[in-house]
Length: 100
Image 1 (cartoon, rainbow, N blue to C red):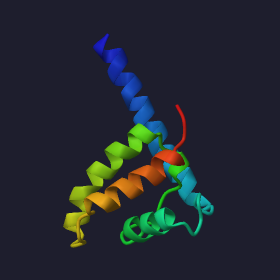
Image 2 (tube, one colour):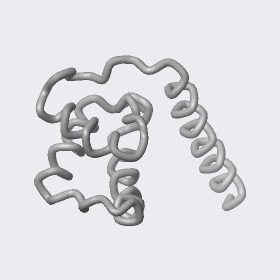
Image 3 (cartoon, rainbow, N blue to C red):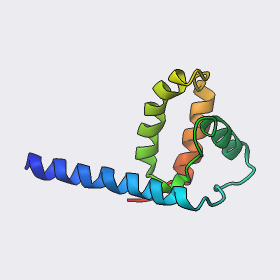
């Protein structure tokens, strides 16, 4: 049973990586273009990489991804996300996230 669960996790992780890679080939406008939330997301996340379309991950996956990026933000010498910035970015990503 554990092998099956690990295999499913590996397949999902590979699918996420593939989706993000394919999404990176042809950039499309971000949802809510020009909104304060979209501008904050694009501005903060776009400091180190092109901001990904929120539809590439589910809301739960975005929550984990934003948490994981906190270390990378610090390593890049950028100011950490404030609590308000994190709430705004997570809200934006969740509203526009893909579905399982």
